[in-house]
Length: 190
Image 1 (cartoon, helix red, strand yellow):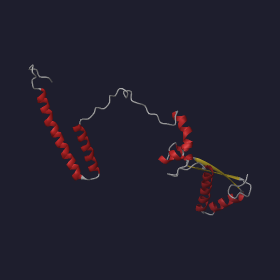
Image 2 (cartoon, helix red, strand yellow; image 1 turned 180 degrees about the vertical axis):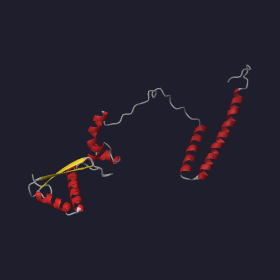
Image 3 (cartoon, helix red, strand yellow; image 1 turned 30 degrees about the vertical axis):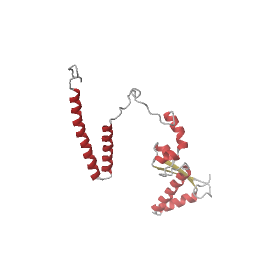
Image 4 (cartoon, helix red, strand yellow; image 1 turned 45 degrees about the vertical axis):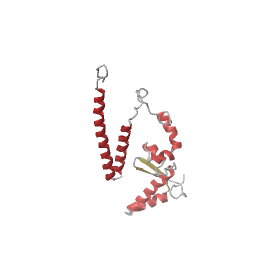
């Protein structure tokens, strides 16, 4: 086996480095090993550390030829290790690799939510009266005005809503009074 550092001599030593739970083994010749040893023996820790880091980075580059997300730069191999994607774009960029995973885990690649048990029994929403429609429209306009910090318009819509509420209160008792008027038989229908 050739030395992984110089690619010239026969490898005679194995250097194993464990970092972050990953173990990397590099095979080196006597000459490259001596260079590492000299930098350590000479008190030059930075040289020794840089050679160790180069071993780690080379082995990581060799291993990680998996697809990369265009949004966050995450490698698919990182997803395989952690089980988590980096961003929404990962779902698009890794779609081909994720399909079998999702199929295996969820039984389908398309999300299928459940319907509430009473969903079919829910009656249709009753039609709003013209007055209720107008009030709902004013509420929406008032909320939009507040969000856009147009407080003068919001106050105007609030006042219109209050006026409609007052109008509704005065109309309701009149309808009740009209309903409580006796008919030709002298009966009051409710």
